[in-house]
Length: 181
Figure (cartoon, helix red, strand yellow):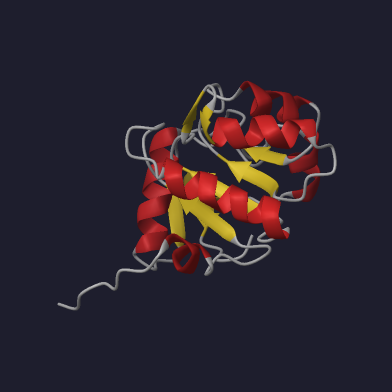
C-alpha cells in the first residue's frame, strides 16, 4: 500500500479550481474539516479564487458562527459574492445565513435525505455511475415534483439532476455521478 504525502495547507487547497464541485463530509462539526473550510475561504478573499464552487455535504459542516455558517454569514453581506454558486445538503438549519440566501435565491440550494446523500457519497467514491433509491418518491425529492430543489434558482438551473426509472415494474429515482455539476 502506498503512503500519502504530507503537504502544507496552501498546496492541499491549490487543487480546488474555479467551478469545482467540492464534497465535504463530517457530521456537522463533529468530524468536518473546519480549518480547511475557513482557509479555503481566506484564499478566496485574498485572491478571488477558487470561485463558483458547488459544495456537497452529507450534513452541513457548521453550527451557528462556525464552519460553513461563518463563511455564509460573510457571503450574505456581499450581494456580489462569487465564492459559492450552490450547495447540496440534507439540512441547512444550522446556518441562518444560508437559510436567508436560500429564501432570497442568492445561490442554488438542493436537499436530499441524509441517507441518500451518504450513499451517493459512497457511490461516487467507489467510481460507480450513480445511485438508485426509492427514498423520497412522491415527496419534494421526487424529480416530478421538485427533485430536491429548495429554491427557485435551483428549480431553474437544475444542477442536481435526478431521473425516475422503472426497473422490473417498480419506480425509483437515479442520482447520477457527475464530476462537474
